[in-house]
Structures are given as C-alpha cells and as structure tokens.
Image (cartoon, rainbow, N blue to C red; front, side, top):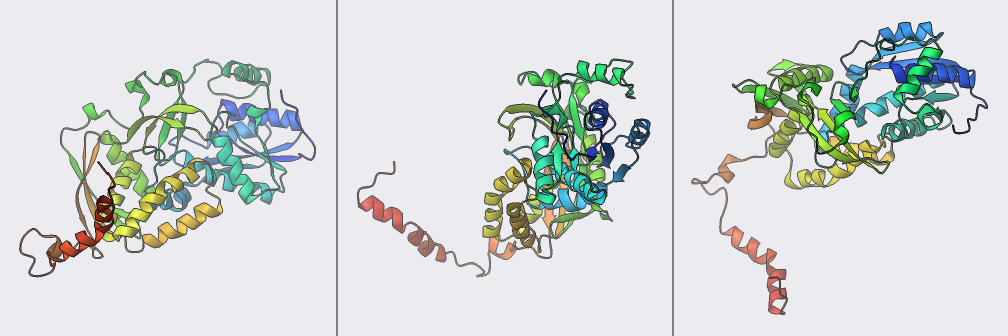
Length: 411
C-alpha cells in the first residue's frame, strides 16, 4: 500500500455508482481518512437505474447524496459540440467514454466547492485513461481540490479482495451473495456502451454475440432497409424524420433505429494515453449515423478549404478529448473555429440503414454550395469555360516542368 497523506482531508466528494468498486471505495475513504464522504451519481443515459445508489449510500451513513439527470447537458454541451468536428480517435473510435468524463469532473468539483470539500475521489484504475481525464478536468477547474485515487493507493488488487472487504465491513452489494462475475468491464451512456476484459483480452478472439446489448447482429437485422431523414441547423441534428427533438432525444431515437439495423458495432485495439495498447468493443449506433450524416451535409455547405482544414485539425481535436484535455485552452480554441465553420451547415440528409450500414442517399440545403449548372456533364450554357482549365493546369504544373528540365527524376 502506498503511503497515505491524511492531512487536511475532512470532506471528500466521491463519484459513486453504487456498484462493488465505488461502494468499497466509499467505506474505505470513510475509514482511512476519517472524513465525511459526499456521493455524486450521474445519470448520463447508461440505461440502468441510478436511484438505488441513494439507498446504498444512506445505508453507509452518507448525509449528502447527489443523484442528477445530466442527459440533456451531456448531449447538448459535450456530445453535439464534439460531433460538429467529426471527431474520431485513431480513425475509428467515436470517443463515447472520453466525452463523458469532463462533465462528471465538472460536477464533482462544483459539489466540492459547494461543500468546501478538501478532495474528490473516483474509481478509475491506475492502468486506464479515465483517471487522467477525471484528474486533468479537476485540475483545470479547481486546482486546489485534491484528488484521491484509491486504486493507486490501496492493497485491494482484485475482485476477490474487494468482495472480502465488502463482506468484512457489511457493505451492501447486490451480488455479493451470488458471487457472480460479469465477464466484461463495461461503461455506458447516451452515446455508447463499451466492453473490455474477459475473452477480449486476446485480440484474436472474436467477441461473443451474447455480449452485445444495444444492437442486433447485422446478419439478424431486418431484410428491408429503413430510410431516415436528419435535419441540421448550425451543424447539429435538430429533427429526425421531421420531428423536432432535443439533443438527448436525438441520441435516444437514433440509438433505437441504429440498434435495430445492427449499426454501430466496433472492435478495435487502441493506444491508451498511459502507454499501453488495449482491445475494446463498442456500440455507438446514434454516433455512427450522426458522423456519416454530418459529413454529408457538410459536403454541400462547407467551402472546400474550410472542409479540408477541419479534416486536418480533427485528429488533434479527437486526441485532445481522448487524452482528457476537454477543459484546456487548445480545445476551446479549436471549438471556436469548428463552431464558426458550422454557421451555414444546415439542411436535410437522407440515409438508408441496412444490415450494419449507414448509406447516404440524399442531401439538400438552402445554403448548398453545389451548383448543378456548373457541375453538369450536359450543356452548362456557358456557366463554366472549360478552356480556363488549360491555363490552370499549365500554372500548377510549372514547377514540375522546371524540375524535369533541370534533370530531376520523379519516376
């Protein structure tokens, strides 16, 4: 066990789910620091009841219990701004876990300030990215509030030791008596659900079909495609099939539609910020649809160089979020640029959902830069002088011609 500094720790705000890990952490914090522990449980649309956490916390003597529905704030202020950037990490991951952490960190430090707490605490392990995300967020928002990360301190190193601790300290755990073990470490919110551990630790082993919770397998998806229309305003989806929806309702609706058609499954090995490679599986139905549709509406409303600049900046933006720097000056700067680019990104995109695929079949906008009179292969009635291309090509090829005449070999 690492040495623990208990000085000036009187009140701690804990990110609390009510599960085995955070329930053990709650009691361990109480005993180790002889401090008051305040619990905070966020409903980010994980699909599970969060209210039972209240009874568990009360049974353990917690006086201040926060259980909050943050689904709308999560979708509006975190997920939607990220999707304006078309952000994907390492070409595939839609950042479902990463984007939830800055909101949790924000509320942890807000509650800590409200109660003049000395520290916050979380249940992230010392091997993962989440410890970095929580703590970088807390540092940016409240640098004087300490962070306690039990997994980096205590000597409880396995599920068995956690279970024994819970039993010895009469900690109410629903499954403590049954001894059942979930084969995966999972995280869920409105945007996605993730799976790690178990058989997935062998990157050559295919994920079990029974693992997936939100999506049917593409093989079992309906044999008939389904068409969906997404309406955009300032780069955000504001309606689905003509029905106006709040941001969190957009995610709920598209998750249901996408899940039904086997859309959004992903199996990747990613590079964690802490240095190791990790295999994970993800289900992101709504995000998969939104990414495809957003690029489609941008294709007709964004200027070429603006679109290309966004694509150049996107990997950096995605890395910033993945590594936990949402609350950083560089993310804020990039967000301002991205949001500026979205002022004319509006209109409707029509997609076809079919057996795991999102196929764009139409896009239209009153602010479209697509001009059929110029692009046509038919008679353009003088809209475009094809002879202009000769000078264009000659000037752009000038440097190549000069180099070739000087004996440069490009073959």
